[in-house]
Length: 314
Image 1 (cartoon, rainbow, N blue to C red):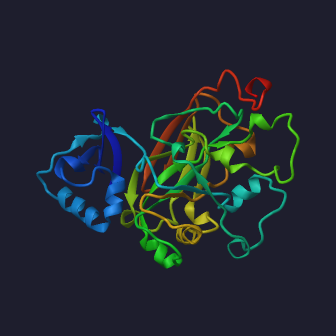
Image 2: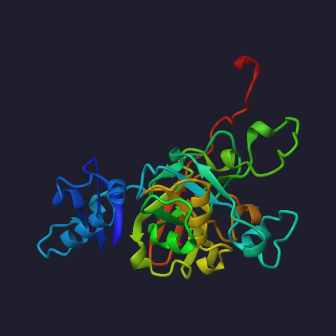
Image 3: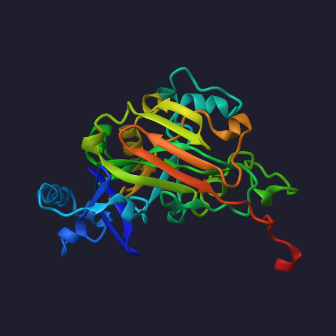
């Protein structure tokens, strides 16, 4: 099933997307869950109930065009990203050393946390933060956790995945508040908080596709276009660590909860590598096979960029 969150007549709701129509779940289950996060917290019985309601041939549906799509889980309990989970992306970043011949054996996943305020809806304009002049795109397959889990094997992790969606892991490649300041030891690496945590920096959608409908998540075409031009073109089988390994790894670091999102890394072709970073008004279209397309526009740069700790702030 394609499970979507949306606004219907300015009120939040959720449902199942079937073609160009939407089966609105609260309309047919008035005393049921109010949103998709509650569905995941209830568990498989809620998904089963929705499937049965959807199977009623007399069920009324809405035009997809009549609702305003939101991120599938607009307020995830946790939002994690994976750094450099494709070999070619590692190489294009020119990190000073290549990966070992067998990175799955000789390296480990590099997850990082993002704030919930980074989530943005399909079609939303991505705000340009006032602390960076360089903004980049990164298409990623995102995993939606379906049940609480901790310290599991990759095989067990597969059972904890409710579904998948698309994430555009927008990145600030520079920070204005580092300019003219002394370099401190260990400051010369990419800053995940500044680089990934800005408001609206993680658009997601257009919906969540349940794991059973995706089948094998490790053989999906994944692409990103900027203003119609193909920039990223790969397959999820090119990941260093597969989705089950990533979920199991993150579940060793912290307890995963229903509705948690894990973005699994981006393939090569990002703007930083070619010097073709985003400009205000650029349209970024991220597409993943069996899921769909997520389209967002980068907003204009600010009139003034942020410089911290000025005398007037003292």
